[in-house]
Amino acid sequence: MRSDIRCVLLQALACALLSAAVAGAESKSLQIFFVDVEGGQATLIVTPSGQSMLIDTGWPGFNGRDADRIVSAAKAAGIDRIDYVLITHFHRDHVGGVTQLASQIKIGTFVDHGPNMEDAADPREDYAAYEKVATHSKRLTVKPGDQIPVKDINVQVLTSAGEHIIAALPRAGQVNPLCASEPEAATDATENARSLGTLVTYGKFRFIDLGDLTKRKERELVCPNNLIGTVDLYLTTHHGLNQSNAKVIVDALHPRVSIMNNGAHKGGSPDAWETIRSSPGLQNLWQLHYAMDSDKAHNVAESFIANVDEKCAGKYIKVTAEQNGAFTVLNARNGYTKTYSK
Image (tube, rainbow, N blue to C red; front, top):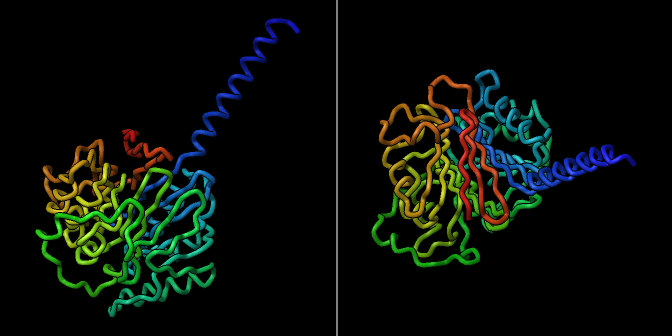
């Protein structure tokens, strides 16, 4: 074989091997898309083998805006179905988009805490709509301590229907010194307190999502002992509102990075923002929106905000996590990325 032809072939083989190596590296990453649903929640998790779990479906109406944004994120992740749709609770900003979403993409299994537990018109109406959609797929009702069988990752149920795990998770259980100084909050009779909260683990990487769990229930998870341990990534509870995000749990979780799924006019309460931002060990707080009703001192730098205007294109924040605990955060609006090594 001529030497020049041999050289070309060897170069082509080297490129093919490099491309395969890169593809293999990407396939071993966990992807998490924090979809902008304007102050609701829609968090899409896609595992290395391509299995997926969506936590909440955003709002109804708006010409299918939230369903469109979720499907767009699914396409960006390279999937054409959602294997699990987990509904944290039956408030409109979390479950309202389910009918429109189900009309656009195939759903394998719905996961929830059981029937609506709030005596109010909107949750009853939204739960009825959810039940109607869920009859066309499998449905799984879970309790604290259960695991949701998503491939490649461990999805541990921490809270559900007002109950919480009793035994500490491995390497957790330490006494929480903040419990003595932070008063117990009032009882919350809404669906928020019944939120289905989960801990997602991928190797050494740990991500927590407690839905809209309110302060009294947050406290039960970490007082007198921290039953969860620490996490790498913390989705601010309840969109960063001050009914949640008690210092007693935020500091105990000791997150390295936090994502706030707030809207332009929902979430991002200055006092809750301050609790999260000042948490020991926190490297960065990212926001889905600039909080218009707050002030500049209680919003992060624009490079860390996915949507800076009230009328926006609905850009997402994406986290790509590795088994060794390292992860990278991407702002889809400006392409800004930051990697957090373990």
